[in-house]
Length: 116
Length: 116
Image (cartoon, rainbow over all chains, first blue to last red; front, side, top):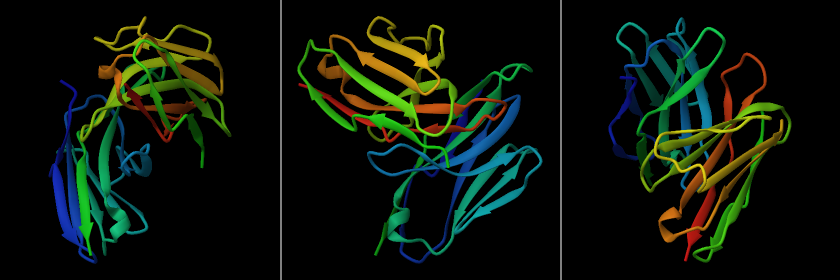
């Protein structure tokens, strides 16, 4: 069954601290994996996209890793800021056919709260 | 980056009335648009996939007569919630996939629907 699981479900950290969010997936065949940030009451915004051959990708204070063998990804946030408080969603793209049909499998998200 | 505009951002309607939500890709052509529903503290749930010029494909359990989707052009898709009930109150989000080989999909800002 194609699933994406994220942990922890929620996380509270102090401003300036680092944190790591986890994403495990059982999606196959795998096309790519994206991390999104979703502020409350807003649509998700893409942070990074990882393809099968990529291990690490950074976007400012966000660093995503991917281990395609163990089917795990992580999102590391460095020097957290109050504005990082949001839900972080891991989305894996499932390749349905060679003709380019895709389906997005969403994780349940991690709710991050950064406190001053 | 590509922009997807969703309108309205908030709407309150009376039970029994219909509400239309628009999703527009502002600077790209979107052959495929997706409609999601999100419950509080939950991840996005795919309702339907619409391709320009053809009928939408609804996910299991989603009533197509209740949630009418029209994708009349490469830049516009609409979701109409017909005969709305309080249980239809939710956060609705659209996303649009860039025309071509890319799997990238950009999200709208979401619409908070409240049925009273």
